[in-house]
Image 1 (cartoon, one colour):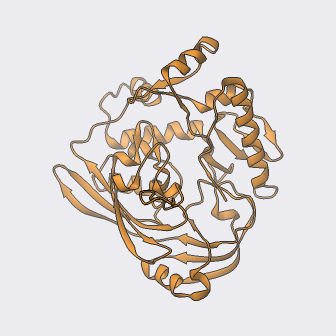
Image 2 (tube, rainbow, N blue to C red):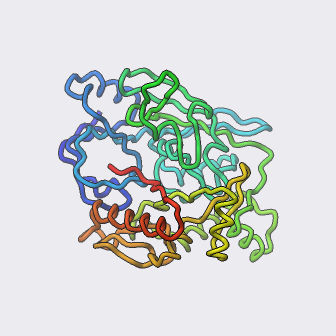
Image 3 (cartoon, one colour):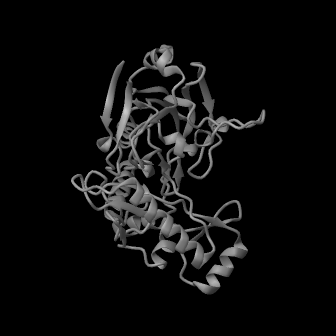
Amino acid sequence: MIAERNVPLQSHNSFGIVARAQQLVRIRSEDDIAEVLAREDWRAMPKFVLGGGSNIVITGDVKPLVLKVEIPGRRVVEDTPKGCIVEIGAGELWHDTVRWTLEQGCPGLENMAMIPGTVGGAPVQNIGAYGVELQDRFESLDGIDLETGRRFTLDAAQCAFGYRDSVFKHPPGSGPNDFGLAGRALITRVRLRLPRPWKPELGYLDLARKAAESGIHEPTPMQVFDWVCAIRQAKLPDWRVLGNAGSFFKNPTVTPEQCADIIAREPRIVHYPMPDGTVKLAAGWLIDACGWKGKSVGNAGVYEKQALVLVNRGGNTHPATGGEVMTLAKAIQTSVYERFGIRLEPEPVVV
């Protein structure tokens, strides 16, 4: 176990915000967690689990004990005509894992290529892109309760997946049926089920357009992977060059009646009917319609190519602060609510 004090966190969050962790422990095995919980001075401390730092906004120095998850490992645990099950250490990078599954002949994650962050963070957020969500490929995960030290395994139902949501984003409740694990659990390994026969998921307009442009209507998994990478690179900034946390707001859902009312006022609004009868609105379109694209608060700005992404315009030398990012976010929320009557919900965790 490696423990450090007064650790700079600028390189550990994709926004590139300057902050420090008073204490940070690098978790590379389940034994490291047990060692942390065995120490009397750490056992009762509040703890913050840090993966790739791609979905957080740090607003100041972090006082809780930071557990930096770096658990490695990838293996195919089952390979049958019905599909593959792969097991991945929580510290592995998600994008590298997607490529690895393709190399193993186990496709199914290619629509989620280039999502930043680690595998351990994927279930927390129920990541998704271009018509596929983690819950569609999820088998189970292992974790450790940071209060009791007990190891546990959860299936999809127990993870309570929702749109960019899971049991790991909700605090424990007071009722007997309130099962929240925010701040309490550390995910160690994730298992994914990749079904056979494989078929491409090309329902999103950008992918359908790629198929039409290339004339390839039955692409291979690697071709879909390459298309998704190209689409994301054209639309989204590389966080290593321009700090960001990806999509900053969730796409809101409304009733068909609410959508019809908005369409009557804004006929061009981008919207998608959902299987449950609700309608999903494009948050980026709402933000752009309010005139925010390219605007800034201090060194925090709205990306010129995609209004859904907030960026750090100051780079590593004069980076945006967490306060500037959140001031900008709140101003956007206010203007969207005043114009459309819709409350945008941020995706990143504010620390």
